[in-house]
Every structure is written in C-alpha cells, then in structure tokens.
Picture: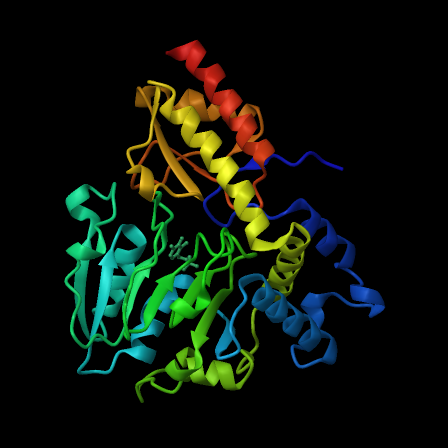
Length: 361
Ligand SMILES: *Cc1c(COP(=O)(O)O)cnc(C)c1O
C-alpha cells in the first residue's frame, strides 16, 4: 500500500484510512450487488438502508433524543447561514448572535439579509483571543434563537461551555468540533455541521433539529431550504449527496469501533495537550488564545520569525506533515487535529517542531 501522509488540513480534512480502504473495497461492487454506491438510485432499498444506518449510527454516537430530526442536507454550513433565519426568524423578529470569529461573523452577515440581528456579544474586544463570558452578553428579550459557533476553525477559539439560552432555541455551528467530545443534544434547538471536518467528505451538511422548530419557515423560504420539507422527505426531497452520506456512514461506523465519542475525546484531549504543551514550553512557538478557549481541533501557532514560515512548511512537507499553513487571513501555522488525525501524527509534528527550533532558534 502507498504511504499515507499526516494530513493537518482544516477542511476538507483527513479521513480514517480504514474508511477509505473500505470504500475502495466496495467501490466497484457494493456488497455483491454489482454496482457502486454512486450508481444506485437513492430510492433503492439498498441505498435507503445505507442512509438509515448512517442516521442511526449518528443517533447512537450522540445519543440524539427521539424528538430530534437528523437531516442530511447540501450547500455546506455556509448555506445554513441563510437557511437558519429563513426557517426560524420571523420577518418582524430578532435573532441573537455571538461573534467569536470569521465563521460566526459570516453567519451574522448572512442573517442580516433576512431580518433583525442583535450581536449580543463579540470577542473583538479580546482581539478574538478569548470568549466573553455570558455575564457580558446583551441578549434580546424575545429572540427567535441564539446562534453561536462552538469552535472557530480559523481562529482556533472554542467554547468549553454551553451558553444558557433559557427558553430561546440555541442554534450552534458545530462544523469543526461535532463528534470530537460528548455533548448533550437536548441543550440545543438546532445543531449543524458541514461534513468535511469531522464527519466525511464535502457536499453534505448534517442538521440535528428539534421537532418543535419545524414548520416555522417563512412562506418565501425556498422549498429546498425548508427544514420541514427535508424532514418530511427523509432528506430526499431531491437527490441527496448519496456518496458523501454513505462515506459519512462509514466514518460513524469507524467511530463506534473506536469506542464512540467519549473514547475519541480522550485521544483528542491527549493530542491537544501534547501540542499546546510543546508550544507553551518553547519561546520559539506561540499560540495567543486564552487557555480555557483553546480549540481541541484547530491549533494555530506562530514561529518567532515569520521569515521561517516557508522553510518550516517545506521541512514539514518533506517529512509527510501536510497542510500546516495557517489560513490566509491569519498567517502563521495551523494544525487541524480532527478525529481522523491520530496521536502518532501529533507526536510526529511535535518532534519536527523541536528539531526545527533547535536548528533555527
Ligand atoms: C468550514 C466551516 C464552515 C463552512 O463550511 P462550508 O461547508 O464550506 O460551507 C462554517 N462554519 C465553520 C465553523 C466551519 O469550520
């Protein structure tokens, strides 16, 4: 078999090798049916079984209560930025949003196209290095919902607590940290996540929506963006992203084999502890994020001199450590260490960082 590099890409991100091997084995002839999953009708018994198993495994992994629908939608998390107000924000209503970085700001800007948005708190006052505590938030009295991003993939800023929204539905963009550690789904009205970080290939976004929030869409909401239409049709109002859905199902099976979300959270904790410890122990590498808001999944860091960025990246690539370049808006480095990135990858990265520091500090 060809050698697999360690891939620290922020997204589309690494997938478990075992999943890709399984997909490869099933590529031409899925379970003796003589055709690929890509070539199946989404209405066929075979495909419906694949789709239902994926949903059930996700339900098992997150202990999703029975009064929540799981939707497998298209358009990515970015389309949800519009879909959420179209479904949940009445034309004369107001929605509360928390600004913690680039993704939550995009959600805010999109929602503003559809109605009144109250930015109840912003991490701007902390240069996006810390999350304002809820005692600093200016929530509306009658918000249709409260939206936040649990993990800012670019800034590396993550909530280690769940906002208390009271009776207001809590809506969360969990694109880059879903399935990375246990959550209590019942605290949320709507959870959504683009698949290409911690779930599967791109082309798919998973939405977990409490049933009482269905049927609130504006009359002007396009049919394809209406959660109730998707729920009533088992996410098959039109042709879904069948292969992405199938592959996500293989990732869910893999995650169950790893022991589920609690087990993977232990690995994730060890991974991020190792990397932050290496950064903090050196004067050469820095990460500016407040310790209680440091992301488990996306670790941005800078070198003492950004002239060394290029040689650092070249040396990393030569060792099979790929995609460590930081987002173009931030610069520096970023290591994304999602579920499919093992502890061995982080060990290899930390060893390389020490070696590079010794040579260049
Ligand atoms: C990647 C990402 C998005 C955008 O996802 P797309 O599927 O590309 O639309 C939104 N929010 C967060 C937190 C992300 O990490």
